[in-house]
Length: 371
Image (cartoon, rainbow, N blue to C red; front, side, top):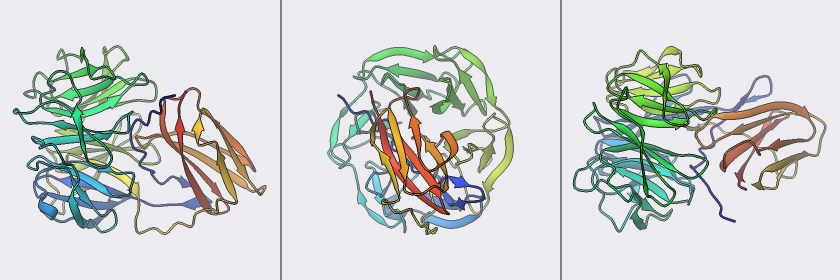
């Protein structure tokens, strides 16, 4: 049985009205200054997480939370992935080794628990894989993926990547789980400059278009459906808040937009404080919040691998169960008393977080959904 991990679970902090609320913080790239800035869940600026040029960082492209708790960052002008302390932002050292990257861009942890890195450069333009220790594994794509940016996997393990091209003829390309080219999935009839991409809960593919200033919606066969978000200038970067709202970076406005789950713009989440060319947005539990976790002798989630998960407690107090997928989206939430369960048969293979709130406390367990 092959274990598929899909993307790294970011462990976003969920909230429970009337019982408990845990904070989140948002990390945003400042590409122009070579920094990463930090904000609270209201958009209040908290200062630099990584100071300008910290560790030699130049033109940051993406942020990835490593399973060991450190923070990985790619820089367009850097040849190696950089590693930082998750609390202080202090530079630890170069993470990747054994391969000199050419303008590295977006990163993800894939179904094989390897780190996938796209490259913007012209000298090298294939997707590169590293293991979780930073060792070079191989070049994944069988054909070039020039100016590759955001990428995702479907439930079958197929790999989708946005290829920006010249900003007027970009496409979304598809590869099979072995890296073999399956051809263009989304063509240039409407799409021009794709950046980040992700699957909605109904299976539609959403694509940020830097040139059009929109997010476009496509069905599972790559056919255009509609425009999902408008009113932006140059969108790049996507993250989800625990309530389902989205955060989208915007180069043209030097800001991050707050967007409702239905695609309605709610306004600017953050701007100013020197923020320039924000091309990556990530959400994580606030490091400054000390949340008292429920003792593991009080709450059990068993098993941690499979399709059916039982949640057992030793009391009869009301509990709320929240399930978060690897993109930070809440896929299920319900209230019950005493014990509960989560049936994952209708959900894609991957890592999820089950969080249980009870008596003003919380307990989070990572589980692996596999067949």
